[in-house]
Length: 332
Image (cartoon, rainbow, N blue to C red; front, side, top):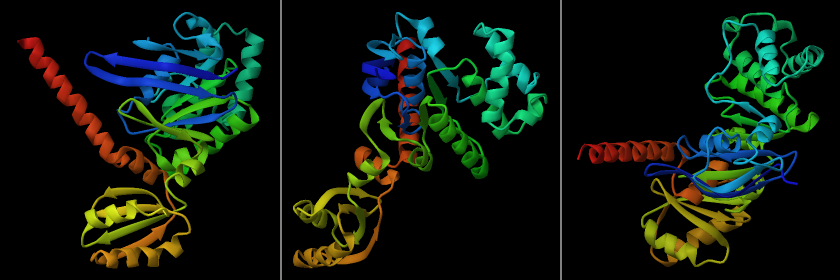
């Protein structure tokens, strides 16, 4: 049985399609990443999977339970760490956990033992009786993860778990997430727009943009899909050189961006003289050429045609334009 299975899952808001026909299969025990810019549909997807939103069309099952017809069963199977803080600053860490456990009907003995377990998991045993208003941002995030684990969920959703945290705290959170997945065998679905986070944590990644899944694979397979090496080329005639490179069997893929050609190849050192000779044969002068290993940023650029930062701006502009259109329509 898959931990999560979706079939053409779709969510629209008026004229905006936030999630567009997503079909995914996530195995039990996976640490699965939804990687994409803000506004790409990541949060909307996990809100549907956690029954906080109803889909417009399509279906999904979480731990074998239908998100439309078995909502209570789904909710008992999952834990959730929201993008925005959802803990009470006026309570201590222990009181926050106790309140959450009571909401799930856990008896006193079970609550007490489980609180000790999850506090140890996130390294907050000595901070349990301090008011949350005195916690750092990283400590609050760790407590939210602990709270999400209180009722022994099978699946844990982490929505941008390190958003706004400093680099050192982010790395610490990464370690807690890895331990939860490997030692507790919790299936984790993580949304992020941080390339390094997805690369460091996830066993598989789905790149999502404009509500659509563009590709799904392991981080290494995604990077290798565009070439073991990446040639970054500047030249006097990029159009002509790109046309010629696309004809070569040794070129796995071509991307044009920011006055450069990015050519995915294998054994890149051997392809440098081939590239220069090819350019010279068609009268193109290569002005700069470098070689490096592909990153997930390169993968995103290859499949979407933009960097993740550009897509964030584009998504925000698209939503604002549609809102303006809807308002004008409402006044007519």
